[in-house]
Length: 306
Image 1 (cartoon, rainbow, N blue to C red):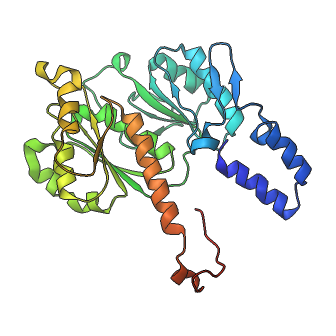
Image 2 (image 1 turned 30 degrees about the vertical axis):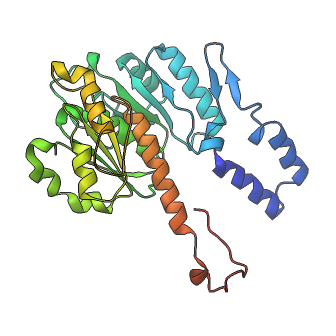
Image 3 (image 1 turned 120 degrees about the vertical axis):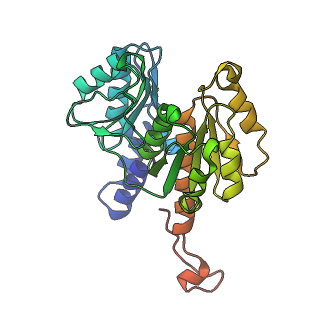
């Protein structure tokens, strides 16, 4: 459930198809009548109102959960939100992906693990990785239809080895309603590669820039364009990279303005943040100004909250 559902209820009251008393009953029972906003499954208290509060439904972090637990949480989220909204699962292993496929065949968009049923779709940013085995890879999975695209997030990775984090960020942003474009392997060892796509970076609403090693790419991008940059350090690198700590510290010490930093390998966090920036940007540009409305200052006008 999200703000769109509440809007539909209010519009139904305004049109007379739902009585105010009935709407009040549904809201006081919990918006749309699903109780206190969470469901106790015994092993998880599922937040069914997060979409209403934040615009983004609860996401299932599959690491540390059994496949059956993940499927149970996803089923409850889909019951609460309806099948028309995607439910996102991150860090899912092959057993969990198989369980999700078995429960919702043909409804999955996946990244990270190439094996999928013929009816599922490849995720934005997914790239084949023949050098890794499915047993050692984790996937991001969206169950249900992806929403219409609004705005543009560009995910930029320094190297092909950063692809799993890039894919997590890309699918997260896409499932959250943003349009997504992915640019791979444009690290600082060959600066001509990032310079060649500068126009794409400048045209985006938000950039997610992912790098391991010394983590220099976000600073370079932040100095090339005025687009907001979300930097994501990865754990890719040799010994002194300390599992991504060197990249993290480098990004935190960026001298380029307009760069914010997520945790190591946290493509999910970057994807959510980028989608929210894009959503707010598009909402602001959809609101007409006084000049657009033809009204004098202080006159009545209608704002469009897209």
